[in-house]
Length: 178
Image (cartoon, rainbow, N blue to C red; front, side):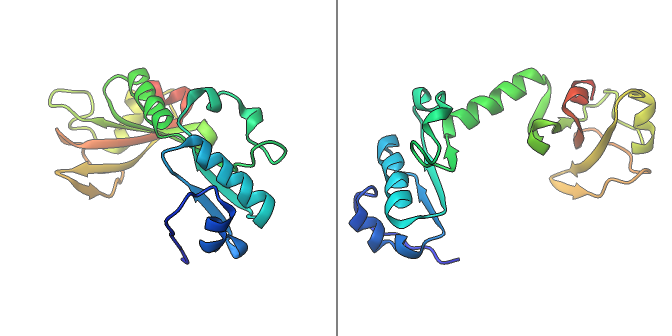
């Protein structure tokens, strides 16, 4: 991985050239200024024909206007919005009470959800192959189990213990039933 960093105003053509924009495959603009990041992507696109441009943009009024970010406007290929990522993550946790983690896969069609197996709960003492009996209408798989902070390879005869973190993967429509 050939990475260069230079000090200077990241939107200036001279600074981008000094950073190697002439032959860069990618520009990652993550300053504290949305506008600087967007202009840096525009300059990299127009002057250096940089194929991939990534910008951190925090201001919601920019993010809600998808038409701003294309090659005919502001050429940003990937937007990074830390606040939006956190907001979406919290929203998914609220939508799935009791979940430790909820992660989207396959363009949001599938989700991985982590739940804690509590003493006296329905998971504890169950072999993985028996879970289908408790959720007969749900197509799901146990992707991983963490027991005392160590991964356990999930197999049909694996018995879920209290305090295990169990990671289920299922279609998004079915994940609430898990």
